[in-house]
Image (tube, rainbow, N blue to C red; front, side, top):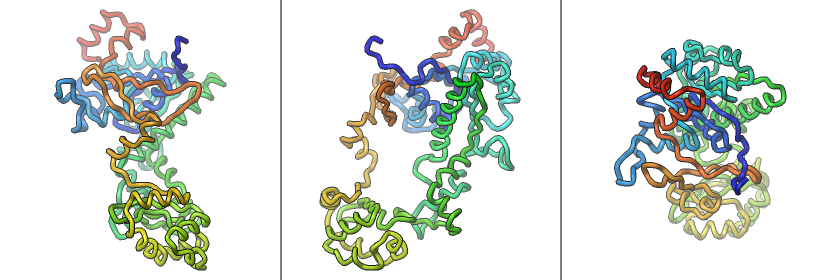
Length: 406
């Protein structure tokens, strides 16, 4: 194999008709795992996020390029093909590529792909092995199916904002678009499951992914808190609804996280604070009692934490085996020796910038490791190559370009 490790999804072709974040996040994971992902973009403009800046990537001379940091975060290891799918010739290109693909992922509004003759029923009639994944805000059915779906609105509608933010403050969205990201990851899991089924039976299938579904699913213990307990969970800020103490504490020079996960750890914390009587206090001996009496306990602990700085507390807590951590900004994160050691910062060659720093993949496979990343593509960078692979001749490609289909 000439020293090159195999890739888990080598030989799988993905036709990616998605834009912004949920879809591109899913297809980037597939690309990281070795799939050949062909990103289909509109001629001229491409994925909306190419223009979502600043910041934009700068070339070797320091000039801004047309590639935003946002676009770069979700499109590595892909090839870019520009096609106008509103044209007959553009639709014909997609149909031909779908015949040669294992997976198609799209995030158009419900009904749009059928309008272009590129819906699941049409394409799978020609290629029954195709796994066809649609990603929308609200799914293919239900009263909201025709609505446009945006992460921010879904975080509000799906309850996530109601449990995020300070207890006395306003509801808050999460700092990154987690409904999009979780939907992308769930879509990837579904695609891999469908490929496994296809490899066993020979039959592809249709996947219907919705941002709202994924966001409701990711409520996890808080969703269960309501369904089982019948109580609407309040916002807890940086505290935990079901564990105490499990939150941010102010220290002499900033903030730290203390995450006591069981009664033994709480007893060690009390010893460290020179307050062993707290661990024997009937109000605090068990986690359930600490949750009920958090308003009494937390201020007592907070008074102790203000007496030392962050470095001192983290050293003491780690030595005592009490889960803890700093509250880092992103400069701290990407300079952290553990983050670096785990390969979470990678540099890849880029034709304009020379090298491009990217966040690495968190997937660590022993036999089929994720390969060093290929830079996110420039708009239409691979159009001619992809079309030649699909059987188009140079004269046909020239005619498609002159006609505006590519």
